[in-house]
Image (tube, rainbow, N blue to C red; front, side):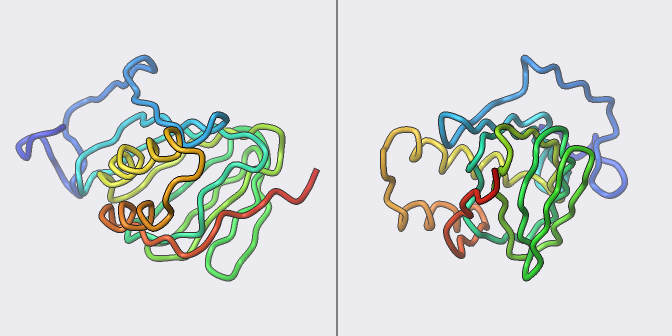
Length: 166
């Protein structure tokens, strides 16, 4: 995306970047979940995303070698990071350190989150690799999902959480 000559301190781009909503790439793993990549960056640069989901949506328990920060714009989530379980809602921010075991589930009817990964360059690739399996098959081969995730430096550790609160 950015050439080495355009990268400054800490691997961040030197150029001004404007990403229009129509230019953001979108991926889904279910009919109710959507991930839009606002800026996917190159490896070593941050990537920014918007995620929308409905009650019960959320990823499996997993870990990866990059940090993630997420700001909740609307809705409520139950988040597990290592051994800590948190309830977060609109206006809350949560940070997941590299290699921490983590997952979340949407507890409200709808939720919307803006997040970042640093360093980036992996997350959109994960969605490109794994998302089609969930949309094309009723019950995707989880061994294949785990293998594809591992190729993107994501280790699947367990199933997703279930929504529990109304």
